[in-house]
Image (cartoon, rainbow, N blue to C red; front, side, top):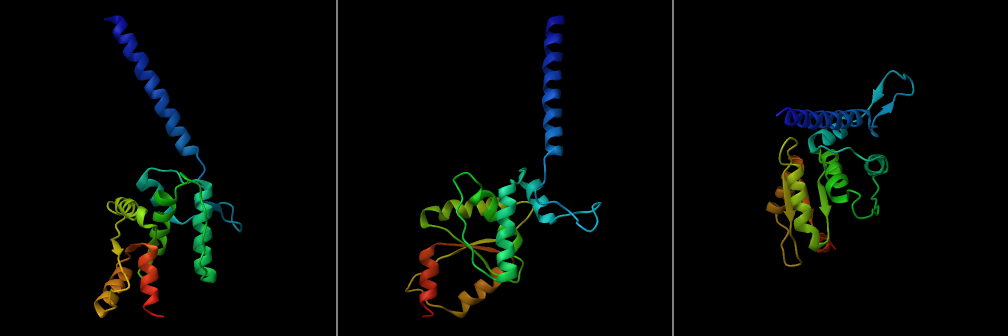
Length: 184
């Protein structure tokens, strides 16, 4: 019986040690979205949406992800430019960068549209729905359009409602091109 207690204590001590190391690592990890204020080094500036995103999805944003999101935001806000960036597989395009951009850009003033290849539409839409179903809620809609689809007032009102409700529209390149060709 005493050897059982000793073994149990050893396992509990090992578990406490591992958990405390994890907590220490989590606390000491650098938050790449936090910047020291140049005019007052006692103040740290950050966009709270980054922190909410990390907390909500139990992740730590990588430096490259924060830099990329800030590049996209800067290009849109300061120059109103389109931007394209290639990332390797597993870098967080679908699960981190895209939802974080949707969180920051879908503000009720502009319509946010995620355009993905047809083969990835279902997966991308399900990731967005998963990300925006609990703490931070956003409607996720699918935009399907072809050359035969008429442009109606109802379609316009749906897109306006999506914008106003801070929704994210998921679409394929074919749907977007077909829609644009209606105006040519």
